Structure formats: C-alpha cells, structure tokens
Image (tube, rainbow, N blue to C red; front, top):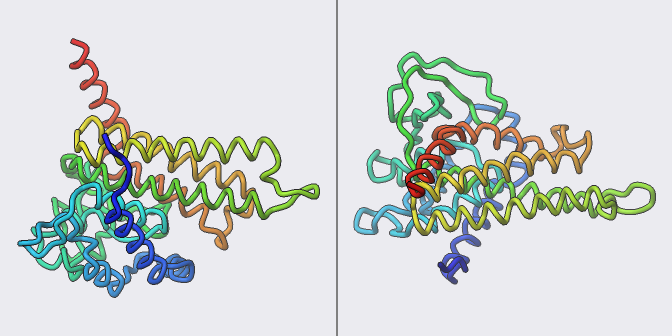
Length: 292
C-alpha cells in the first residue's frame, strides 16, 4: 500500500494551508474566541468557493471530483488551525442540501451521541433536533446542544473527525517543540532536559502512528480501519495537547496561548460521530469474526 502523497495531493494540502493561514490566522482565532457562537459566514463562503465542501462531489454535479484521501488532507489542515464550524456536517451534505457545497448554507448534524454542534447558526439541520437543550461547551469555539434522538454513525464522519484530530495533534507537537527550544531554565532551553525530550518524542510517535492509520483508512475506507484510525487519532490529539500543556507549564492555560484550545477541541471531537467505546466494540466484533 502506497502512503506517499502525490504531487497533486501535496499541492492541495499546501493550498488549503495557505488559505487558512491567510483567512484564519492567530488574530482571527483570537477574534473567534472573543465572540463565541458566531460563525464567520464570509470565511464559510470562501471555503465553499475553494471547494472545501465539494471536494468529493463528482465534477458533473459541480464538485471537485476528488476522493476520501484528499478530503482527509483538507480536514487535517482544518484541525491544525482549530477552524470552527460544522465542517464535517456541511461537507457530508454537499450535493444533498442546496448551498452546502458552495458554502452558502451551514449544515448541522444530529450526532450519534445526541449532540449537535452549531445548531443555532445552522441553516439546515439533518436529523431530529426537536427538544434540543443547550449545553455549556468546554470548547468556546464549538457551541453544543443535546437532543433526545441520536442518529447512526457515518464512517466518513468518523474518519474526517480523525483527520481533524490528527491536525490538532500535529500542531500541539509543533507548539511543544517550539516552546521547548525557546524557553530557558537554569541557563539552557528546557528542551535540553530529558523529561521534556521524552514528552516531545512521545507526542511525535503518537502523531505519526495516527497519521499512518488515518491515511491508510482513507485509502481502504474499511470500517475497521476507520475505527482504528479514530482511536489512535483521539489518543494522539488528547494526550498530545495534555503533554503540550505540561511543556508550557501554567502559561499554557492562559488565553494568550492556543494550547488549551487544542485540548478542549480534542475533548469535544471525541464525542462526535459516536464515542470511542462504540469504535472499540465494533473492532472487537470484527476481530472475533476474523478469529472464528
């Protein structure tokens, strides 16, 4: 199985990264945190114009005509910069909900855990959102509602969420290494101390293991591979953000730093499209079936 990105895939990833760096940099992230619950509709339309939501939609239906591996690369970049909004729900609705592909409509989805992200900002809600109750979300950039009726799990939603987790884990590792190189204690960078080296090395190992699993699942689209990717990406994102906070010390919890936002987003994503327990149970059933 080939995991090296093609030239076109590398160009796609670079293009998405450049777009997000230009439209959702540090200042935009701070502004979004200062106005929780407000979605930047202009950015949403720009994402639509760039083909973010129509990546997998066939060209004859007005889409880009690419596949799941390319969508995974785009969502990895979105996770890397903590891009807010119901990205997965709107992407999955492209071609089915008018305006979703072009970013003219914001689509929310009732998740398998009975949670709905960005319900108040949504133009269209897929699933039964009757009786929804607002929740206090730990992530200031992901408003949540709980609904009585949950929907089934969409494996593509699970994989794209794993891709976002992978992007968050990658960014947390980068932030930890940058801080370990710059911050000095006892006359030397803290990255020179063995305990900090081990934290950073463990973050990298978890991230690259998750990357291999996520990219493999994007190629095979096998449900068991997707569940494996989800579990590894969740671990890389949550534990990576925690370790990054430890490297930063107390200042990592302040609003001047984005580190704590990665941990909060990672926590919320672990409950999107079902939770880890469901993935573990499906994997157990699959393994038992193979051994019988």
